[in-house]
Length: 118
Image (tube, rainbow, N blue to C red):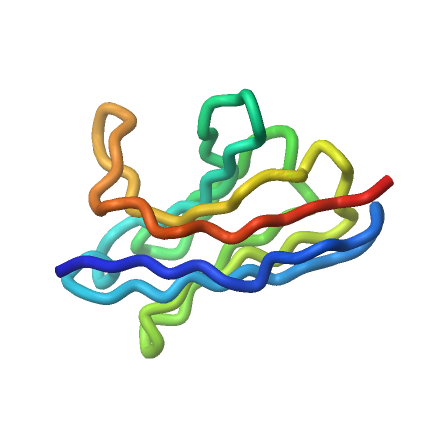
């Protein structure tokens, strides 16, 4: 059974940094694109960073040049390094495997809360 578990969130001041981790179990990680999503209160969940199986990355404009997604195959783990955090980055962050048509390939994990104080 596929399971995703995110960690690393917390409370940080604006301008600070956090590193999120997502451990994937089951047959989801190897050879698949992976992505980080976030959902702020009252907003829809949005994709913020994506890493393809070959290693190329894409980012939402709102986080470009501040966030970095990476993966470690040996640990089935995806990371999100977040620098220069802003109050608008406050959200619950999730990872998942993006699929064609905008879907995801696994049940959502619990997410990890990131709160940025201004």
